[in-house]
Length: 222
Image (cartoon, rainbow, N blue to C red; front, side, top):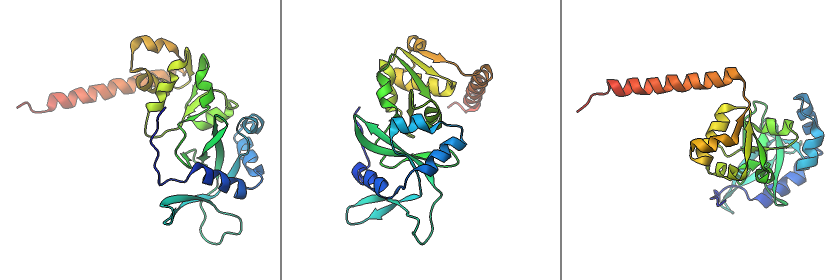
């Protein structure tokens, strides 16, 4: 799909080179996954080298872009807490790093990737994960949408015959943005969320709708 990138962000080639030069041996990243009951073996087999890194984007006035900088152990001065760095490879080419912190928030180094597991979008049955850690826990099977603002990439789900998802909010958002909310297209979705979560979702929707109706009724008519 066509994408528009922020040309002030670091280039993929520069980010990859910085990581390979300064990310270390990756053993701490394997321990990070193991501590969260995620088997590191299928992750490394699928994505390659991972690492815990302390990084920041530093403005480079000479290039007019930010530089992705990994702090080495001998760095003097403030550092940011380490984050898990996962490479994102598409069609055999590195395009981005996904960075996950201890609070489970995540960011992208180049903002050029919309998916984890994009190659799985062409399968007839696709498991749609809520969070990158769910994708890692599943051995990098299925897909996870990681674009925080745009939902345009959700249209790429239309090749799938069945879309499995264990979170009703994520599934219905994908249905709305990817399939235009077409009632017939909802048949593609197999939502295996818990009954309590599904009921809570619809209860919130009903309360939200009731609040909007109440505001409209109280609004003065001219």
